Image (cartoon, rainbow, N blue to C red):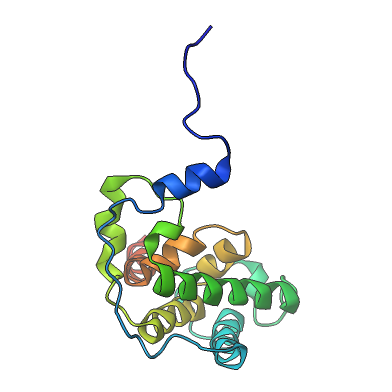
Length: 172
């Protein structure tokens, strides 16, 4: 018995209506490190993939058996590589189109997410590579489809969280 009506006729109309919301995002202009072709993208994918496969000197206090050095990888290489391609794609879209491409509508969140908006594509990718290299918990999260966009948007915060968690867990 509601009198509420929809504002939009379909998803596309709803998306168009909020695309230009004021998030405060101002990425780098003329970032020469954004990949221009699949070969350049593939180079970043390979670095992410190798970081994900790393099992040496990880920061997790007790890495899951999924990442045990003496066993095969829990995840298939095809699936891990696919996730890495997604990370590069998301990062590229972020740098070319800005944060408004993501379904984030909480104004309080913008200030947190915008802290890394001035990173070059290369700097962003290096932070993500470091995070995946040393945090198998983050690799597991990425393989579950969790937190990828947020990590790409604010990799400094996510990497600091990984290091902070290790420090806190080490004291227990």
